[in-house]
Image (cartoon, rainbow, N blue to C red; front, side, top):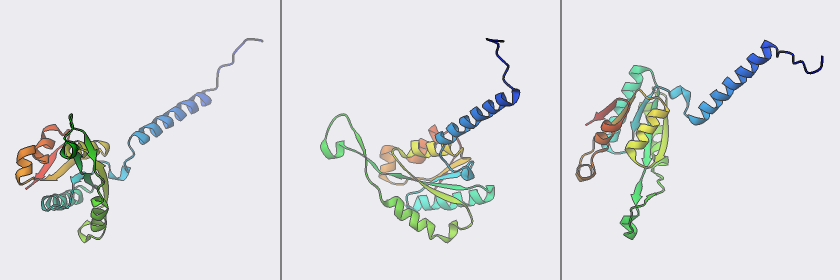
Length: 175
């Protein structure tokens, strides 16, 4: 019979659906390149300062108690070019920051991190935005930061205060 179409077997249809579901998963994984072992972990902002070391200590305990991983985030410096050239409008430039490598080596040798799985993530840009973005990518249960003391925090506003206002997940501020 010319022109007659035979229905496609049900097994072939299911396979195509399965393939499209696999494609969707692949797209979703490409969009979220984070390690699934650290999903629902604890994000902590760390720059090597005393307040960030206290935040790290608290975050380690929090990760141990919840049985989750620790995502340590170092945000590289970002300086306005207006400081250098006096141009208008302000343009921001990411300054190469080798501090992340040094922090990574220090953390790798630290005994206090041996009891909890952890990773170090480097970002560049606004600290609040990047911490929240990493928290979103990893579906973090909380973000832990140290409080800012000094004149810089008073003038520009503290990272902890700005993050607490805009974050979509709990923020723990360690004094």
